[in-house]
Length: 103
Image (tube, rainbow, N blue to C red; front, top):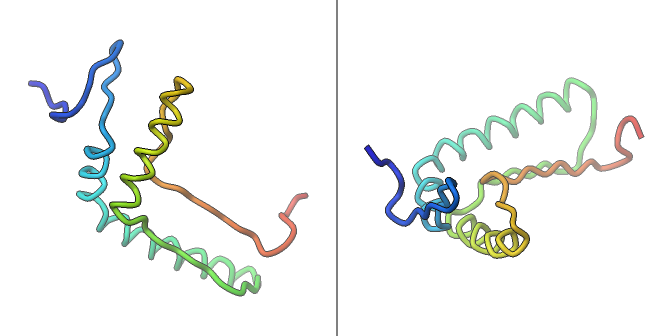
């Protein structure tokens, strides 16, 4: 049974999925991603509080579906030109307010 998406393309044994299909896959799990984002933010708040680390602001967001699809499309061109594939569907950023511990 072939479970490849309709718009998938086989190339040297690798199935390439279109940005639209990635968007559809992300759409199907976005609710879970929103919940996970909230849980991770709460965990970070708790950990910082327990460590008596004061912060000015903590931001958390789950990427919008259209923004996700556009980013995959943009990176696809970038990586195809270089012969690489884009990474995972999520970006993670940690922006410390001061000097990084251990540096």
